[in-house]
Length: 316
Image 1 (cartoon, helix red, strand yellow):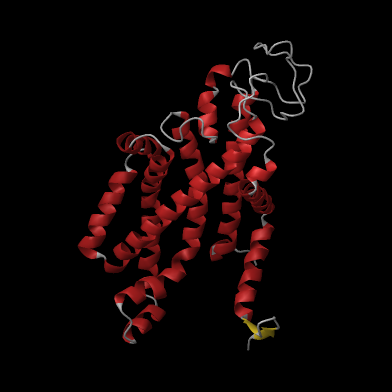
Image 2 (cartoon, one colour; image 1 turned 30 degrees about the vertical axis):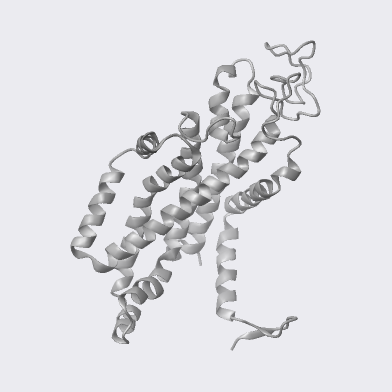
């Protein structure tokens, strides 16, 4: 039986089995304390990205010529090599200091959260969607179709991922959009191989044979019968690809092939501040820490998803 809950528009049925599965998922996920910390920090980043115009104290590209290379506010007694008039100490209006052209570091880091999460989402969605479709086709039909697809994937995997993405961006042209397309193409073989293996494992099961006997067509068998039972490993892989997408986009931005200045993307911020690494540590350290902590939080969250979704790792 299903529980019935009252609502303004009428009764809503609640599936106890779905509720039990969600409760089981949260139980195993919350057992991993690192995953919970990663989830909390990731939600914090989402809030920063959504409400960046309200949270950031300044516009990301606003330049204050009287506040060039100011140190963070807590470094009040520090003396920078680069002098700004008579003032060389931090200001309360620039909590994390400013960069070489007087832009507020905190505001640029907050707006950079938008770009990093946007890159991760778009790259993961493109790679996941294309990888699932190609992997399901390869695993279901097998034969020459499978052979051709997997040999192409093997060729892509034979190249270092960042190098291949760099080559693709060089062909397509520098820019954030082309960088996301290149990274998505590089990540796609991982989803193809994972989907293919899962489909091959599920294809011979009794419920698939029963659906085939009942007259289900190929498309229904592939995407309605088999695919939903292959999603658990794909969700975990998508989480890991999310963090790798942020890293690769930052690397391309650092090399000048990703987001272009004055875009407040963390990798581009690192590239712009290379020459000031010895006299203004904050312009290099803060974007690097943002990348490090974000990727770490997403990876911790991915470990928790793996623990909660993989039956072999569930503890009794």
